[in-house]
Image (cartoon, rainbow, N blue to C red; front, side, top):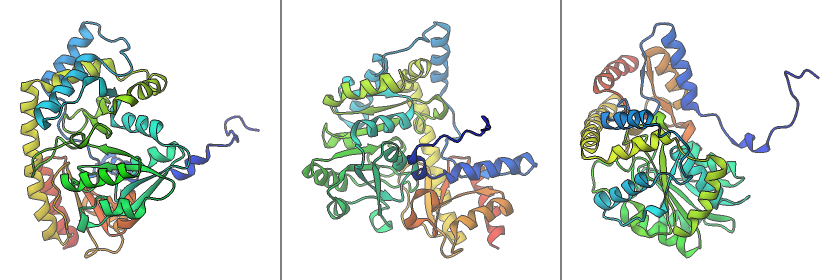
Length: 391
């Protein structure tokens, strides 16, 4: 046997984890850029802004002062208290700091939530389309993600009726995202309350991914935490706070789950980055929040430019996104194969968009996702290129 080609068996669950096509397109784009092509990337959901100056300064101070050791698995007290105060100020909700657990990004929070709540064979309901990694977190713990086709008539989101219709003997809960990746749409407060009620009636859990909640444009912001202390909420410093590479997030859990999640965090992660945690406290200073709110308005301007521009190009945008920095557009009037269309647009127009393939089978062939987390100048140039491409 050649030791460089081991033949030991791999875990069966790997067969249920699909490649992330967003990243595959990014690799193709990088190859074209290496050849000298100018590529406008509207594929990856990463803000073109970076951490606010007070946050960078706080990180530098933490390093200079030597605050680099492990922290407790649930995070430093000052950051948990700052998040608690933010919930009170922005959402009018009293969330005890003891219920807030600091994590290595929202991905770690989702992993901890699924490790705590998903047993082997457990079924978790989520909408199709939805962020692909969410269903893979369920699969990683030998659960089953049940994708429910969710069209524009319900804002591409799960509904109370979906929960009542699709809840089966193996269903244990729901995993929602509001605002959503890939659609940029939120679940209305009254509908979310009905969903939570239907899940409670069945003794299930509700996990709500709110990592884009800070980027809500049209209505007064609200958190699912306003609906009760039995809901698990996930959030992150990556999107609104522009700290993608810092790998810092948090989760809010019912008090009775804190010790269980802490036990898992101790074993799986030890703690989130200590430097990122000390820097994260500075996100909630008045100076930083003023910067983030100004950047939010810039995202709104970009949305208000790109949505009508897409419609003029021949895309259908059946639901105007009210949050995040995505547009989910129907390309069926331009192509019968969204995957092929995005590859052609990349090679011929130098514009990266993402096919619906990643986000579930229901919209795979007819929809593309556009991220407007790039400059307005880039968006305008992309529209010029796409006009020529479709010309």
